Length: 155
Ligand SMILES: [Fe+2]
Image: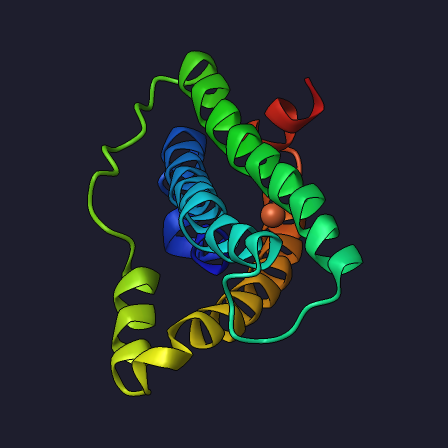
């Protein structure tokens, strides 16, 4: 996280730095969990059920059930990490009842297209968001290094 290495932030001391990194981790994990169970799994279930308007071979539809389980585990894992971090630190994760911004963006995109294409728009949007998460996750892992986030992941 670039702000964590800024000299002014570094001068605030390790406790402030730990709080910044922990809160960033909460933000990221909440986002990941919601992306998994609100968007990715919605699409995976649509593929598995044959609800999208693209012909999908039966083997791929069956594989979508595996993906559905995988993604559910990612959501579970994200929420579990938040709970572990709350126990190890003095920082309570924020409430997350607000609808994620990515869902508003998805609805806006769907509104621009024919209603019959809503599932296809959701599929493409979700695939793109998933790619961005992978890139972001790689950067997060590099930036957390040896702080609490890394400690939690190793337990
Ligand atoms: Fe995932």
